[in-house]
Length: 326
Image (tube, rainbow, N blue to C red; front, side, top):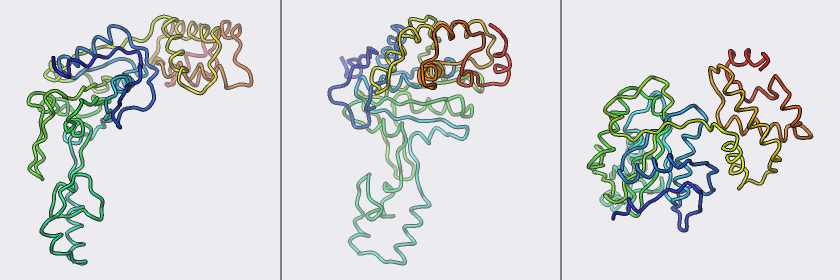
């Protein structure tokens, strides 16, 4: 049995015994369903990226933090933008800085021994950086850092992959597949992931630019994250959210009333942008602490217009509809 196969995610947030320095330091208050837990473990077992889709605010991003914390693994986050290229996650090479250092040495001069024997460390201070060693000018990205680990895998979060152009997902396939390696052209290095510690890759998508390419989808495991559909699930999310925070927890009757009201509104309205878990937690905090006293449970149950609706409505059409009685 390999080291990768021995890793098992349970979703209970237990603290690791010997976490990596780049592992999240605080528990992630994340409610993991059994099917989602199984999907993560399948991705670890099969060594395939796990693609998560679902409404904004449903917890796609936070899952990676939960996995990394529980297993004590480093977490390397890669936020994708419209201009992002696949190489950005592997490494960046600063050729301009190297040129600058060459010119500085011409002006200032350098000791012959320094010129003949430039230091060969990866992490080096600016004072010891030397243009004779190209390694001093490359900086590893999230995937590059994960590939370099030798004692354990890393969790790599590729967040909102659909923001990039259509070539980006397919370009990733050349890296996230056997032999799991990439080459740094400027230094001639080939970086290969440890065969027993390949990264655990979690990818999120909101389908902002439509469907992802079919070859990329074939390479991934897929999981759609449904929004919690019962008050009991929302109440458990609230419990976990406040469990490790130095904050006053809302009273159970207020949590129950807020969960009932929130789910009722979410089901009854034709939302253009439905609120997610994060909006619910913010709304509950407002109900609990914004005024001098917590919002009245009886009043909340009777209200036809939601209090503090600024927290929940994110579009003009939803805002206009919110003035109508339920």
